[in-house]
Image (tube, rainbow, N blue to C red; front, side, top):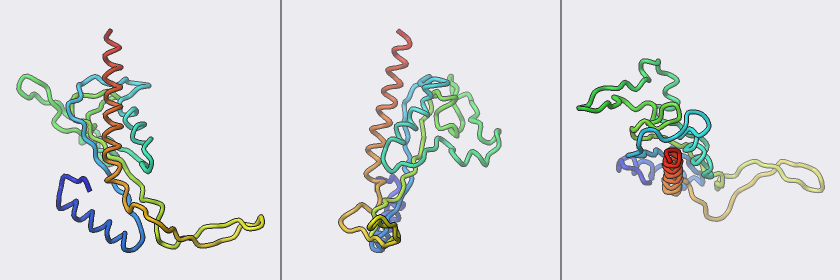
Length: 182
């Protein structure tokens, strides 16, 4: 399941096997962390780094949503709770938290970039479902049951794709930043 927490990975695998036995499928959430990104990548308006990463992730089939840092949970926080305070750490300044997910105003801030993508369940399930058919120019209700082999959950297959797309987006931002300094 490509999860760092082995207990969570076992629970996920059990859930996938349970759904497989029922002929159904599962979606999931994948978290990506990008470490070592220098501060200053991205632009404040048209080429925001978070927008570039979002476009890359949303171009992956079955990905239906993305959130950075605290993401949707930030909507329930106050400004003082959500702000990433800066503190002295030796001779350098460091953020105490990372609610912004390493991005401020579309520009990397030097912290780890953290985002999560939502992956929809596989639509090809072995559970009978309602649909329609066209016969002699007339539309009629019918039932459909998929046959063949299908993945129960796409998340394990999407992890390396998301990693590759994130690497491409960061490489592009690094090249744009380098070209801007020439």
